[in-house]
Length: 141
Image 1 (tube, rainbow, N blue to C red):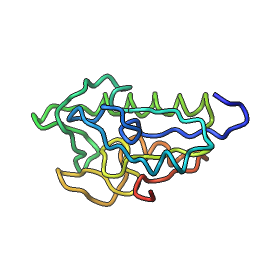
Image 2: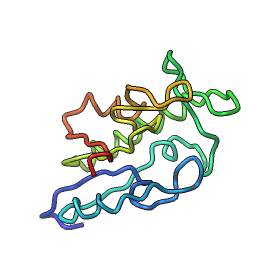
Image 3: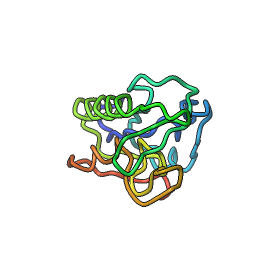
Image 4: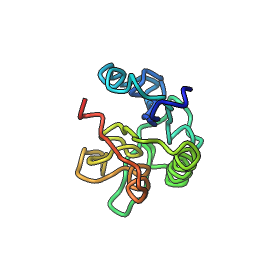
């Protein structure tokens, strides 16, 4: 890492890392162009919370509980991943964080609620909103 560059934390799936629930990626090459002068730190809250890849798709319920497609409660793993992601941010002090919109973890403005994309934030994005870090959605790129 260059000490003269700014730092960005980025949802790992946006960088081409196969960490999504389906084992795939959501590579966004426009982000690389935007971040060419940044040190990039990928993170996946769901993996940091102990969930495997691939894994069953999950959704938030109206009470902020998270369940997967088998109705198994995965709230603890999502919360653990959110807290671990914030720990990384507290160590590296990023200038920006770019989140994957629509994710029950990383959705900044929209997330998966009751199996539909709705207004609201994912668990990790909501936790980061209480920090003083600039937060961006991948949909800006």
